[in-house]
Length: 224
Image (cartoon, rainbow, N blue to C red; front, side, top):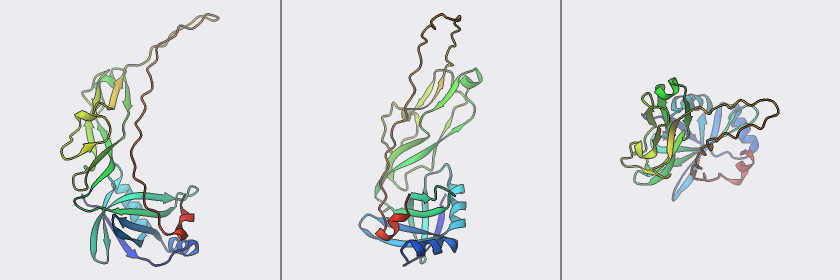
């Protein structure tokens, strides 16, 4: 599904002018790409907020419409006011059709695991999976039906569809697991508690992110 963002070109820079732009209901933005000059943009704040709701749970790939031309982009960075959550700035990365990029793809779980119904614990280790592929091959999300998963079972990256995409993390990395509940040991007052072997907490691997290009110096002060 294509998500459309309508944008206009802007020439204004500087803190005061950006505040006036936001008060008028727009958000300053920039679109950049490898080897292409950056373009200063403005987008409608209300429409972009609605798009963010619609795109939740999907890869942040959009069609940016500017001067009658549509360009496929990735929403690379969204800056917000930490106090009132107001949109401050958006970075769009232009991607060429034959260019491979690295992107985090959301993982959605469907159903209730049989192991959870039996008293097990759901451990969703990877809520996003970093993949590398051309933009037209990157899936909107990975969906896993966990309804048949029993206690002690896991779904690994190797179990996900991988046609035309390259996983950045090892294929044996667990995405979701059903854990057995830990035992509770009762002790008498004054007695030493028996040590209970604990399951080592699963650590989510660090997700690889690409740094967004920064806009002109006048607007750096607005970034969080």
